[in-house]
Every structure is written in structure tokens, then in C-alpha cells.
Length: 113
Image (cartoon, rainbow, N blue to C red; front, side, top):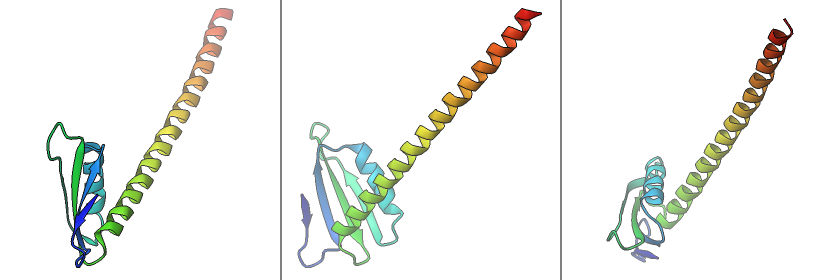
């Protein structure tokens, strides 16, 4: 849900259900990198309330569009981290298999002596 002015769309507060510090702080970080953003902050109204409020103020662009762009940028960042991590795990497994093969060959050479 968006709370804001109909006359000034550059300032809005977004109330997101089923979100917590993980998403809110990540979006806050991403939006702070955007030069269109003059202020971004978030609050959790109550610890037992599974909701987060994100306040976005911009230099003039609609806050809704800036939040959407920031969320998409965060998604791209997460996809990059996921693929980089997946590649690192694959590389590690390949290296472990090669190391194990070399170790087995070394053990076979020692056994034959």
C-alpha cells in the first residue's frame, strides 16, 4: 500500500506486508545508490506486526517508479551473487575432483614401488 500525496508524487511511504529487515535494509541500500533519491528510510511499526514501511523521497521523479527501479536493481544484484556463487561452487567441485584424482594416482604410484 502506498501512502503519499496526489499532488507531489516524489514523496511516498510504502507499507509492505510479509517483509522484514532483510528486504527493507537491502532496498534502502540499493536506493541510497540512486542519484534520484534524496531520502530513503524504513521502519517496522511493531515487532509482532509482519510489516515494513519504506519512505522514499526523490529529486522529482515519482517515488513509486524509483522504488520499482531500486527493487529491480536489487533483484539483478541477487541474481549476480547467485550465479557467481554457483560458478564458484562448481569450480571448487571440479578442483576437488581433480585433486582427488591426482592424489589417487600418487597413491597408486607409491603402492607399486
